[in-house]
Amino acid sequence: GQNIDQPTEMTATEGAIVQINCTYQTSGFNGLFWYQQHAGEAPTFLSYNVLDGLEEKGRFSSFLSRSKGYSYLLLKELQMKDSASYLCAVRAGYSTLTFGKGTMLLVSP
Amino acid sequence: GAGVSQSPSNKVTEKGKDVELRCDPISGHTALYWYRQSLGQGLEFLIYFQGNSAPDKSGLPSDRFSAERTGGSVSTLTIQRTQQEDSAVYLCASSPHPPVVAGVEQFFGPGTRLTVL
Image 1 (tube, rainbow over the protein chains, first blue to last red):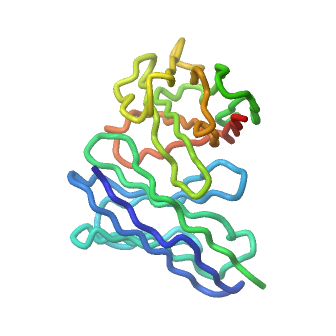
Image 2 (image 1 turned 30 degrees about the vertical axis):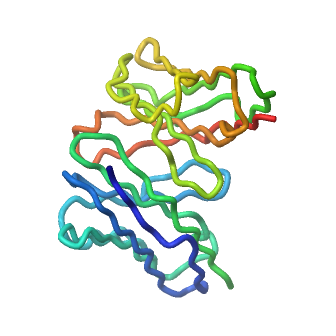
């Protein structure tokens, strides 16, 4: 089976930088996804990592270390609209995704 | 273009009744997934369709749960003899390619909130 851990909640201030960590244990690792989910809405895709290193996409970046079973999502220049749940999901082999429980981020003025 | 749609958006039912939830994927998407999201829990995988067949139905929690997909498009998730623990948001997602294609994202619908009284 797979085990995915993320912090339950985080708080940060508008304009700041926040890092959301995700650790996983799986055999046959084949990619890690980050999704954003606003309350009452559908999850939307943010990033995908399959090789070690940093993937940057505007204000959002995602990092992966396969040897450590570790990823983080970095959000810069936080805005109020970034308040949402951030879901880490892992694929093993050619199977479907396994999602973590999500990290609820609250951005305050 | 149109995204994934689901109906109804909300469903309240009595314990013991059957319910049907519908998912319309993005046109041309061959892969379709059903998930369940309970309060404080992550997205729980239920079943995956490729075309009209279901290569992975390992997440269905009991034989009260079933799903079908017709014409490689619309899918329905049926829950028989609903129980209170079935209360959750049921999310559908579609993807243009099967999971074997690396890095392909899933596009989610808005979900159906099911409440079993």
